Length: 191
Image (cartoon, rainbow, N blue to C red; front, side):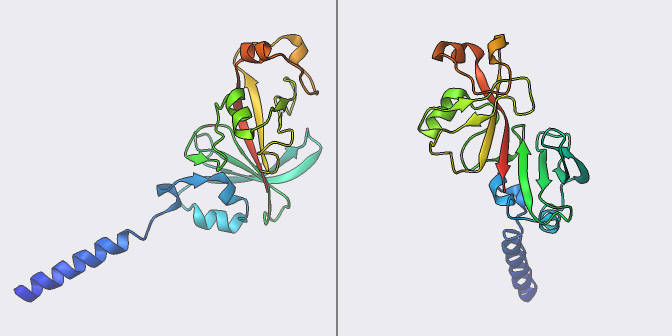
């Protein structure tokens, strides 16, 4: 009986210790930047519990056809991955537009404010006008985030004046920026 007890105790300890090493990517913090070096096969093998869809679509204002993959479509955890090639061996970019489980190593998140971005960048930022494909795109102006390969798109919480629309860098006073209440609506990570 004593041998049975010891054997059971040893098996219990071994089984508990082995379960500590079976952590999946979904049980730890996920950084989008960590995916940039993956290919299609690596993504599928890493995220076996995620719904993953694939297709081909038009990008760059409808001028380029590219393969893309969506991880966790139609959920707060959705990531949209665009590939450099049809064989899905190199990531072009990854787009995130909701605050799900994915995070950025830069600490930028969906909903970060204009002032927070300026502080993170350690230098004033500029942004493009609204109402087009690259609406609210941020220029880092040689600040800390310039070489981060992270591209951010702002959106106003309040309706902007007509002069803030279009494909050009916006010139706005601090008061006008505050009045628009600009927040990050999407983050693009380049491979």
